Image (cartoon, rainbow, N blue to C red; front, side, top):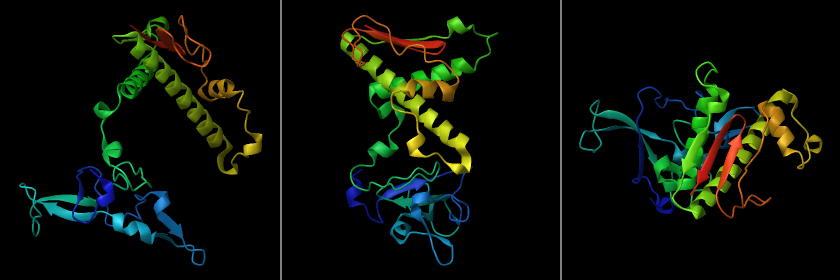
Length: 239
């Protein structure tokens, strides 16, 4: 759906039995922080005027999809386009132009490399959570296949980058969380030449090797097929 031409008659319906939208979302803390402003004089938190038009409206919908009157129909909340934020998880989108497809697309609508990287990471986390009595460490491996060398090279590089970015984000989050309310000064951050140490320190697991395959160059590009290994689990792509 094209979000640039949205109005009050075009939008989405939010339906939930276990996480309904409250009557006062500000008091319940359901609004994104970027939507709030604090009055310097009264220290009162309020919703930005520019965001009020994106607040959901409570409506009842009949089985045929029309608006029901009175107490009939299912209770839903209408959100006009563009899709500004998710009422379930609270993620907000400040970019209002373009299409809403990228905000609402499911995993099967993503690119093949992105979907496989996410699935691989989830499987590896599940394997790591198993006790050693159920599955030995040396058996915790994930092997993926593609049907040609070009896709194998692309997938291996994408997975390497995905793991590196995830570890770096986890390291930064852990470092800031450890500092608490005192925060961390940017001038005291580790140099960029030590990201591997930071990831190892934050995750408490050694990053043994990023890849090992014939044809891989130091900058992460593959000439043939490649494999990726992280901690005691590994993922490989081959043609």
